[in-house]
Image (tube, rainbow, N blue to C red; front, side):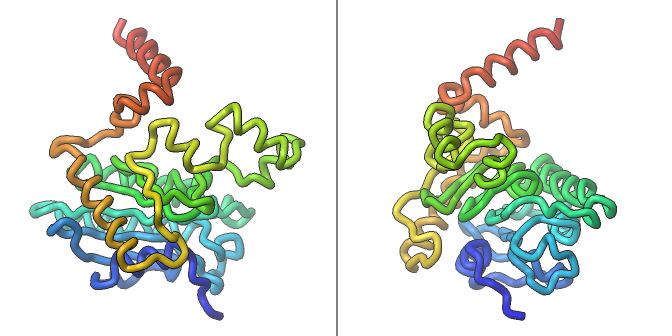
Length: 272
């Protein structure tokens, strides 16, 4: 069976064109060691695998193999860089969601996804700079497992780039609303929107990259994205280990004012 050419694979192949591929991972997990801004970097992506033994994880979802595979690739970088220069970690994100299924639940998909989250967070806390590039879907638990632990989030300004907890069709079924009604609600409530520009308005994105063909980028467009990744890496402070930028940045204080106030009040009560 042929493997679909997903956006995740397209951008992984462009960004890691001259990188050395990491062996021993599931077919749906790609990792390669290359360079970025003159330093070492490991690029990671989750891509469709139509031959996966888990039917729910054949179209770019994050399932058991994907969660454990990401964790393995990240933990390997942690071990290898413990006493040397810590390579940057670049998550290329195009994931359809968590691979929900009875077998997945019985075999502990929550543990697999948690292992990936823990590996990303451990790498960040150990001094690895972590950036995520959103080139397609960034849905539900899949985004939590792959990309959301990054210190800087970047996204292509494209209609196919979506950050949400649930797909539009599924949300319509759950809320018993039409797609048109959902879009109307999203217009007044940005967190409900499926537009990446509205997500950027919440202050969570470091950069929204426009003027790039997400499906078939030119060489110059790929270089522009690479330059944006370099800028994001340089923006991460040498001692920056947490994700506080998501509520301390100027745009976050404006777009997430209520969340910032909740955090302030919780911290105030916690220290009493």
